[in-house]
Image (cartoon, rainbow, N blue to C red; front, side, top):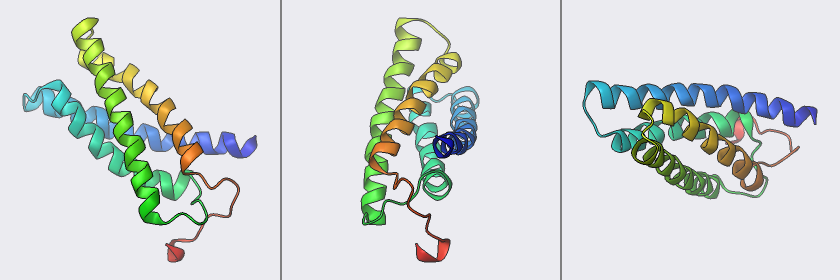
Length: 138
C-alpha cells in the first residue's frame, strides 16, 4: 500500500506540471491568439502528453519487463488518444451544453482524464514491483 501511495504522489506531481502546461497553453492559444477552445484544448493536451510520457515512464511507473519501449509508447499514445477524446467531449459538453466557461470546464475534464490515465497506465504499462531500470539500460 505504501508503494501505491508513493506512486500516486509521484503521479500527482507529474500531473500538476502537465496540468500547468495544458491549462497555460490552452489559455494562451485561446485568449492571446484567438484559437477555438477545442483546437487549443487538443494542442495543449498533446503538448502535456509528451511531457507526461517522458516524466511518467521515468519517475512514476516501472518499465514492464518484456515490453519493448516501442510497444510501451504505442500503448501510452493509444491510452492518451482515448484520454484526449474524453477531454474534448467533456470540454464540448461543459461549454456548449452546460454553458460553463472553458477554463472552468477544463478543470473538471482534467480530473476525469487524470483518473483514466492513472488506472489505465497502472493496468497496461506498470511493471509493478520490478526494480526500476537505470537510465543506461534504456
